[in-house]
Length: 111
Length: 118
Image 1 (cartoon, rainbow over the protein chains, first blue to last red):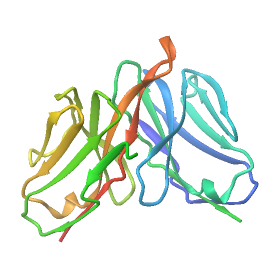
Image 2: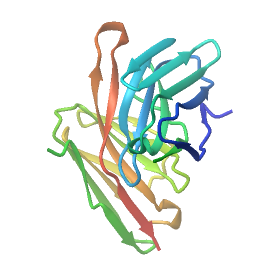
Image 3: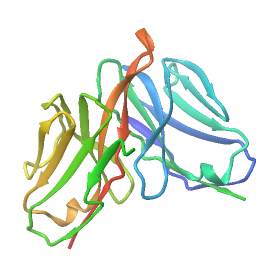
Image 4: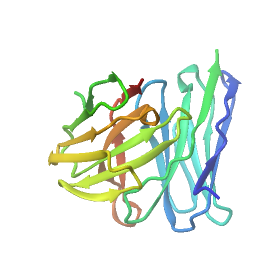
Protein backbone atom coordinates (compact mmCIF):
# COMPACT_ATOMS: atom_id res chain seq x y z
CA UNK A 1 0.00 0.00 0.00
CA UNK A 2 1.39 3.41 -0.95
CA UNK A 3 1.90 5.89 1.85
CA UNK A 4 -0.43 8.44 0.25
CA UNK A 5 -3.21 7.69 -2.21
CA UNK A 6 -4.94 10.41 -4.20
CA UNK A 7 -7.36 10.09 -7.09
CA UNK A 8 -5.61 11.78 -10.04
CA UNK A 9 -8.91 12.76 -11.68
CA UNK A 10 -9.22 14.72 -13.87
CA UNK A 11 -12.07 16.56 -12.20
CA UNK A 12 -14.10 19.08 -14.20
CA UNK A 13 -16.70 21.32 -12.53
CA UNK A 14 -18.70 24.44 -13.48
CA UNK A 15 -17.78 27.79 -11.96
CA UNK A 16 -19.36 28.27 -8.54
CA UNK A 17 -19.42 24.56 -7.69
CA UNK A 18 -18.21 23.13 -4.41
CA UNK A 19 -15.18 20.93 -4.98
CA UNK A 20 -14.08 18.10 -2.74
CA UNK A 21 -10.55 16.71 -3.08
CA UNK A 22 -9.44 13.73 -1.01
CA UNK A 23 -6.45 11.66 0.04
CA UNK A 24 -5.93 8.62 2.20
CA UNK A 25 -2.71 7.72 3.94
CA UNK A 26 -1.29 4.71 5.74
CA UNK A 27 1.35 6.10 8.12
CA UNK A 28 -0.25 6.89 11.48
CA UNK A 29 2.85 8.93 12.45
CA UNK A 30 1.84 11.75 10.10
CA UNK A 31 0.89 14.81 12.11
CA UNK A 32 0.95 17.66 9.60
CA UNK A 33 -1.13 17.70 6.46
CA UNK A 34 -0.24 20.07 3.65
CA UNK A 35 -2.12 20.95 0.52
CA UNK A 36 -0.11 22.26 -2.41
CA UNK A 37 -1.48 23.77 -5.62
CA UNK A 38 0.46 23.40 -8.85
CA UNK A 39 -0.42 25.37 -11.94
CA UNK A 40 0.60 23.96 -15.31
CA UNK A 41 4.38 24.18 -15.84
CA UNK A 42 4.95 25.81 -12.45
CA UNK A 43 6.32 24.65 -9.12
CA UNK A 44 3.94 23.58 -6.32
CA UNK A 45 2.91 26.33 -3.92
CA UNK A 46 1.64 25.81 -0.38
CA UNK A 47 -2.08 26.44 -0.12
CA UNK A 48 -2.67 25.60 3.54
CA UNK A 49 -1.78 23.09 6.20
CA UNK A 50 -3.38 21.57 9.29
CA UNK A 51 -1.98 19.94 12.37
CA UNK A 52 -3.54 16.70 13.59
CA UNK A 53 -7.29 16.11 13.21
CA UNK A 54 -9.83 18.83 12.64
CA UNK A 55 -10.79 21.58 10.24
CA UNK A 56 -9.03 24.70 9.08
CA UNK A 57 -10.62 27.38 6.96
CA UNK A 58 -8.89 29.97 4.78
CA UNK A 59 -11.23 32.01 2.61
CA UNK A 60 -12.95 29.70 0.15
CA UNK A 61 -10.74 26.76 1.16
CA UNK A 62 -11.33 24.32 4.00
CA UNK A 63 -8.90 21.55 4.93
CA UNK A 64 -10.16 18.64 6.96
CA UNK A 65 -8.27 15.77 8.57
CA UNK A 66 -9.72 12.64 10.15
CA UNK A 67 -6.80 10.77 11.70
CA UNK A 68 -9.01 7.89 12.86
CA UNK A 69 -9.80 6.99 9.26
CA UNK A 70 -6.56 8.42 7.82
CA UNK A 71 -8.54 10.62 5.47
CA UNK A 72 -7.61 14.12 4.26
CA UNK A 73 -9.95 16.48 2.42
CA UNK A 74 -9.77 19.88 0.79
CA UNK A 75 -13.00 21.71 0.01
CA UNK A 76 -13.20 24.67 -2.35
CA UNK A 77 -16.36 26.79 -2.17
CA UNK A 78 -17.56 28.99 -5.03
CA UNK A 79 -14.87 27.57 -7.31
CA UNK A 80 -13.33 29.93 -9.87
CA UNK A 81 -11.61 29.28 -13.20
CA UNK A 82 -8.40 30.52 -11.52
CA UNK A 83 -8.64 27.48 -9.21
CA UNK A 84 -7.89 25.24 -12.19
CA UNK A 85 -4.69 23.46 -11.20
CA UNK A 86 -3.39 20.20 -9.80
CA UNK A 87 -3.86 19.84 -6.04
CA UNK A 88 -1.40 17.69 -4.12
CA UNK A 89 -1.82 16.48 -0.58
CA UNK A 90 1.42 16.02 1.36
CA UNK A 91 1.47 14.69 4.91
CA UNK A 92 4.51 15.02 7.13
CA UNK A 93 5.90 13.47 10.31
CA UNK A 94 6.57 15.84 13.14
CA UNK A 95 10.32 16.51 13.26
CA UNK A 96 10.81 15.16 9.76
CA UNK A 97 11.30 17.37 6.74
CA UNK A 98 10.34 14.65 4.29
CA UNK A 99 7.06 15.48 2.60
CA UNK A 100 5.29 12.52 1.00
CA UNK A 101 3.22 13.73 -1.92
CA UNK A 102 0.07 12.21 -3.34
CA UNK A 103 -0.10 11.97 -7.12
CA UNK A 104 -2.25 15.09 -7.29
CA UNK A 105 -5.78 15.70 -8.58
CA UNK A 106 -6.11 17.78 -11.70
CA UNK A 107 -9.03 20.20 -11.37
CA UNK A 108 -10.61 22.24 -14.15
CA UNK A 109 -13.22 24.88 -13.31
CA UNK A 110 -15.20 25.84 -16.40
CA UNK A 111 -16.57 29.40 -16.73
CA UNK B 1 11.76 39.15 -6.18
CA UNK B 2 12.46 35.54 -7.05
CA UNK B 3 12.46 33.37 -3.94
CA UNK B 4 13.73 30.05 -5.29
CA UNK B 5 15.28 30.14 -8.75
CA UNK B 6 16.60 27.38 -10.98
CA UNK B 7 18.71 27.34 -14.13
CA UNK B 8 18.25 26.27 -16.78
CA UNK B 9 14.49 26.16 -17.20
CA UNK B 10 14.75 23.68 -20.05
CA UNK B 11 17.51 21.20 -20.76
CA UNK B 12 17.59 18.90 -23.78
CA UNK B 13 20.55 16.57 -24.08
CA UNK B 14 21.74 13.25 -25.45
CA UNK B 15 21.94 9.99 -23.53
CA UNK B 16 25.32 9.52 -21.87
CA UNK B 17 26.02 13.21 -21.36
CA UNK B 18 26.72 14.89 -18.00
CA UNK B 19 24.67 17.92 -17.00
CA UNK B 20 24.14 20.22 -14.03
CA UNK B 21 21.12 22.11 -12.71
CA UNK B 22 21.60 25.06 -10.38
CA UNK B 23 19.35 26.31 -7.61
CA UNK B 24 19.49 29.44 -5.51
CA UNK B 25 17.20 30.74 -2.77
CA UNK B 26 17.21 34.27 -1.36
CA UNK B 27 14.84 33.51 1.52
CA UNK B 28 17.53 32.88 4.12
CA UNK B 29 16.34 29.30 4.65
CA UNK B 30 18.70 26.69 6.06
CA UNK B 31 17.26 23.65 4.29
CA UNK B 32 17.08 22.94 0.56
CA UNK B 33 15.76 20.00 -1.45
CA UNK B 34 15.72 18.37 -4.85
CA UNK B 35 12.55 16.67 -6.10
CA UNK B 36 11.82 14.75 -9.29
CA UNK B 37 8.40 14.91 -10.95
CA UNK B 38 7.97 12.20 -13.56
CA UNK B 39 5.70 12.07 -16.59
CA UNK B 40 2.81 10.89 -14.42
CA UNK B 41 3.24 14.03 -12.28
CA UNK B 42 4.37 12.02 -9.26
CA UNK B 43 6.58 14.27 -7.11
CA UNK B 44 9.25 12.50 -5.10
CA UNK B 45 12.04 13.77 -2.89
CA UNK B 46 15.61 12.98 -3.92
CA UNK B 47 17.90 14.89 -1.55
CA UNK B 48 17.81 17.39 1.28
CA UNK B 49 20.59 19.59 2.66
CA UNK B 50 20.58 21.54 5.89
CA UNK B 51 23.19 24.27 6.09
CA UNK B 52 25.37 22.50 3.50
CA UNK B 53 25.03 19.09 5.17
CA UNK B 54 23.24 16.18 3.48
CA UNK B 55 20.32 15.03 5.66
CA UNK B 56 18.02 13.13 3.28
CA UNK B 57 19.31 10.85 0.54
CA UNK B 58 16.55 8.76 -0.98
CA UNK B 59 17.22 5.75 -3.16
CA UNK B 60 18.69 7.65 -6.07
CA UNK B 61 21.31 6.28 -8.52
CA UNK B 62 24.90 7.31 -7.81
CA UNK B 63 24.87 9.17 -11.12
CA UNK B 64 23.03 11.94 -9.26
CA UNK B 65 25.25 14.03 -7.01
CA UNK B 66 24.04 17.11 -5.16
CA UNK B 67 26.45 19.84 -4.11
CA UNK B 68 25.84 22.70 -1.73
CA UNK B 69 28.59 25.34 -1.84
CA UNK B 70 26.69 27.46 0.72
CA UNK B 71 23.26 27.35 2.33
CA UNK B 72 21.71 29.52 -0.38
CA UNK B 73 22.72 27.19 -3.22
CA UNK B 74 22.07 23.56 -4.01
CA UNK B 75 23.18 22.20 -7.37
CA UNK B 76 22.42 18.83 -8.93
CA UNK B 77 24.92 17.11 -11.20
CA UNK B 78 23.85 14.13 -13.26
CA UNK B 79 26.37 11.82 -14.93
CA UNK B 80 25.76 9.47 -17.85
CA UNK B 81 22.21 10.62 -18.47
CA UNK B 82 19.61 7.96 -19.30
CA UNK B 83 16.23 8.16 -21.02
CA UNK B 84 14.50 7.50 -17.70
CA UNK B 85 16.02 10.66 -16.23
CA UNK B 86 13.67 12.75 -18.35
CA UNK B 87 11.47 14.59 -15.86
CA UNK B 88 10.94 17.96 -14.23
CA UNK B 89 13.36 18.60 -11.38
CA UNK B 90 12.25 20.97 -8.65
CA UNK B 91 14.39 22.66 -6.07
CA UNK B 92 12.79 23.77 -2.81
CA UNK B 93 13.78 25.45 0.45
CA UNK B 94 12.00 25.39 3.77
CA UNK B 95 11.24 27.50 6.80
CA UNK B 96 9.34 26.95 10.03
CA UNK B 97 5.64 27.93 9.95
CA UNK B 98 3.50 28.55 13.02
CA UNK B 99 4.49 28.43 16.66
CA UNK B 100 4.94 25.84 19.37
CA UNK B 101 3.41 22.41 18.94
CA UNK B 102 1.66 23.21 15.69
CA UNK B 103 4.71 24.62 13.97
CA UNK B 104 6.31 22.74 11.13
CA UNK B 105 8.72 23.25 8.29
CA UNK B 106 7.10 24.02 4.97
CA UNK B 107 8.68 24.03 1.58
CA UNK B 108 8.81 26.65 -1.14
CA UNK B 109 9.41 25.37 -4.63
CA UNK B 110 11.30 26.77 -7.58
CA UNK B 111 9.82 26.88 -11.10
CA UNK B 112 11.37 23.58 -12.14
CA UNK B 113 13.87 22.43 -14.77
CA UNK B 114 12.40 20.33 -17.55
CA UNK B 115 15.04 17.77 -18.54
CA UNK B 116 14.62 15.80 -21.75
CA UNK B 117 17.09 13.06 -22.56
CA UNK B 118 17.10 11.93 -26.20
